[in-house]
Every structure is written in C-alpha cells, then in structure tokens.
Length: 331
Image (tube, rainbow, N blue to C red; front, side):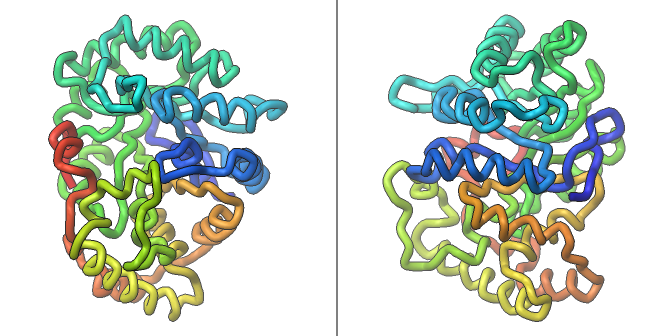
C-alpha cells in the first residue's frame, strides 16, 4: 500500500482510506459480520485510515469499529472522526452543534465508544452557522494540547472558512466530496488547500455507488437507503448520469480495469495530497477498490476520461435541497 501525507502538518496514511458510514445503515441494511470482516481485511491489506462520524446511526458505527479493531495495535491505524451533527430519536437530522463545550462532550463519548485514548483526526462535520469556526477549532486545539486529539481536520467548508480555521491551528486535511461527477472543489477550494499546505480526504469518489459500474437504471433504493432522496439517483437524472457511466466503462475496458477502479484512480491521480475514501461494505467491493491504487493514468487516459465525463456533466445536486442549503461549499 502506498503512503501519503495529509498536508504539511498531518499524519502519514495509506493512499486509500476506508469510509465506514455505509456499515451502519446509510445505504440500507448492512451485514454486521461482513462489515467487521471488511474492516479487518482492509487493515490486513495495508489500509491505515478509517473514517467515521459519531452521528452515524447515533454511535453505532463507532461501536462497530471498536469491535472490528479490538486486538489491533493502536499505532497500526488512524481514526478520522466527524462530530457536531445533532440527531433525533427517530434518526432525523436536527442541525449542527459545534460550541466549544459540546466539542469536548462529543469527544468524550467517541473515545469511550471507540475504546481508545485518542482520535487521530477530529473534525466538525459541517459548519455551524451559530458558532464562529475559530471557537470550534480553538476547542479542538485544547484537546490536541491535552493529548486526546492528534490532528485537526475540517469537512465540507469553503476557502474563507478554511483560512479562518487554519489561522487558529494548522489544519491537517479537509474532508469533502470529490469525484468525476463532483468537481466543484477544483475552482477555489483545492487551490486554497495547496496554498496552505492542507491535504484532502475525498469521499464519494464513486458518487455513492452511482459511478461504481454496479448501479442500474431499473434499480430502486431499498428501505433505509438514503439514496432514495438523492437528486442524482432520481427521475430523469439517473438515466442521464448512467449514460456517463457507460461512456466511462468503455474507457475502463481499454485500461483492463473496472469502472470503479478507474473512478478511484482518477481521484487518486489528481494529486499526492489527496487520499480517496472508499465506502466498501463488503470484502468483494474492497477487493475491487484496492488495485485502483496501482492503476497508472496517462495524459491520453485523462483526456479520454474527460470526454466520457466532462466537467459539470452530471445532473442533479449531490444532496437534497434541504441539505445543500446547509453546506458552506456547493457542488
């Protein structure tokens, strides 16, 4: 497994990370035993970065990871944890809470659920419009000074917020959606990260499965699958978007790889400062993703990929309108 560094101040991590959200029902029911086996298989394959959020199924995801990681050398993996999203008993999203006193409370619960004495990268999941980001980052800095957190990260914020946060304490990385169909970061956010020496962990590299090569036009999202609300999976949008996937499949055929591998490799090749996160829920999907890091893309390959999926070609926002309005950065 290749190694990359999260920014100029962050940790060295595997060039491919594992996003665990889908193991806790975000995309419908997940098999617990298979989820545990997938985390362990990822570690055995050299994946060292595991991403979660304390609000993923209200702590379920953290407890699942604690079980999967039990008995492993704590120095052999890094935990990236998001916090600040409030949930209701019915699972409803109730907004953000990034007040300094809440940050410390969230951290205490995460440490207990994960069964660890520190978090490697701790980050607010979204910008709290009621709390200056300087106050939130200042609270995490206190946790860094106390030894409970190793590095500070951000998630889904724009350049102005990144600069304000970085002025309080060096930011290791920004976690944000980035894929062939979500390239909004390229215009302003990515240049800002590179100017400041901040890395990126890219989630949604397969568009939540839409550009994995495994989604079909007649497939419906099942019970509990959040994609049922996604504009890109709905109505006429999905047919248009899957046509892009078929064009990408033809390029993948010339490279002797799968669509998913090509999509992951494209993100990884956008810079050594970018670490793709794959949300594999099964060992089969993990096994497909891993070879993507060995796929070499030439200038001609990039040109063919761009023809297949031009910038801005996807239809539909990446989140429903209610969630898009809460983002600090768009598509």
